[in-house]
Length: 529
Image (cartoon, rainbow, N blue to C red; front, top):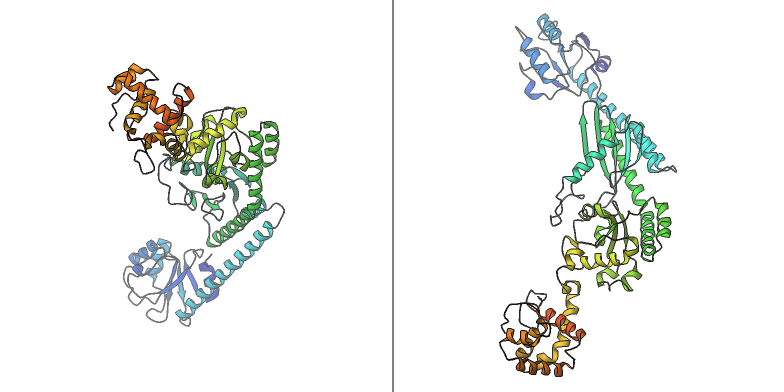
């Protein structure tokens, strides 16, 4: 804190005339102008010999008071032998501290004295800050770790402190902490971000949250800072006090933030171990050992959602966001490779897929936290978890940038549940004999109409505009070329899938080969070749 007028008077030998000496002095200015206020900032000790001061001085004094001058020091023995009585009356009436500077006291000596006092005060502030940092460091070495740092920080700032996890839940707080106000503000800022699944990500490290937060009001000053060295905060700490934070206090708060972040990052190994436990817990759940899974998860302080639950599948980038709000685990490698789950994609086999289990009513809210692709299963019980996991992964593989629900995906046709490249390869192999046949257009069109009419000769022939005997001949030729019995329902199903895959859009958006039609079997539209 800057020195007061009382300290300056003791140091320089100035004689107080009127006004309080409790005002702080942040600088010294010398001016003989009738209105020096344009060149002042406030809290200065103004030195003058009164060369241009005469007549009614109440206006001069009023301007100094309005500017926030700490005091007026009047030098006698030059222009004036004594401080003008009118100036004394005006200063006394306005409450402006007025001092007399003896003839033998140079103005420069007053400036040097105040400068030395300010330097000493700054040095003392730095010393106090270093001492506080040392006490915080020793606290960080205690067994309580981060909790000890929070307790020590509250004493250093003369207020309260609180430690919160990434979701805003209080992990530790000192008496009097306004943690509820902090949590409410964090929730408000999170809710303010775009909720649409296709909305572009916010430019800040944590969508909806600033890099720091300050809440101020009468007798209430709160600062919230994020913790963690990554792009997404892994926690927060908050401090509060009755008075505004001084530069020294801000330095101490920043030092505490560095210590807390260091402790948090050093806990990365522990976090990775916890993630392995959750992956093992997921494996137990998939094996039907729900009781053992709950026992394995209990030491971590986590819990499984109640039934009915929903399975969310997402990419690895969503792990940090999902595990703050739900039981989340990397998909076990055995589950990726073995039945009954579907074969994993190449990028998933390397641990690129995470799974979250959430209560049905919270599924949409949790899925929106990722800001990326998410596959969502239908509601299921723990005994149906394998099927729910498969549904979520199938929905994720659909390739959307937002949330894909399996229930919606299943209603869009069988091909949406198949790998497009595998389906096209199957189609090309099965229909290859017809493609190589010279009159393939007639055969492909006739096969499509025959399958679309569910094997009814008259309906299919009428759709094609040919005689039913002509259609019978063509189907006989198809059967010979393919080496398949068209009366077999399984063969019909395979051919239906092959024709549908051939007609589906390819990677570039064009219909696949060999078929050139744009509709699936069973469509009522005419086919043009």
